[in-house]
Length: 132
Image (cartoon, rainbow, N blue to C red):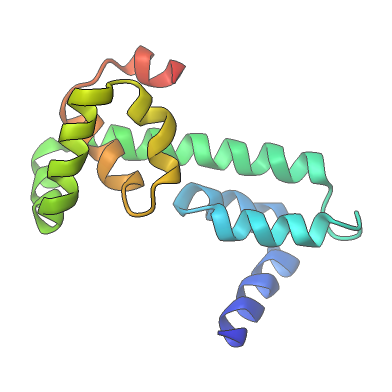
């Protein structure tokens, strides 16, 4: 476990904000936590820059996953079949909670990518998605 964290910190130290940005597109939470730790003394990163870079990466990542579901629906459906239980739960949440799913899916472990793909596949209105 220590080797994994040391590798991740090494990536942040050697590639800086670019590593944080790319990491935020893919997943983000662990990278943001580590960048926040490295920014805690304002020696490696600046707190405001960390927040802005991570936010930009997260927004771009969310839009890329939504777009993948929207434009590549057949392939996305095929991928989601591997996660049938999650897909059913997410579809139920989408019908029950609507737009609130977009706000809270990020905080429910294991639902982030399936939820965004499902929104894209279902042709959820992009402007509404953008708003939330």
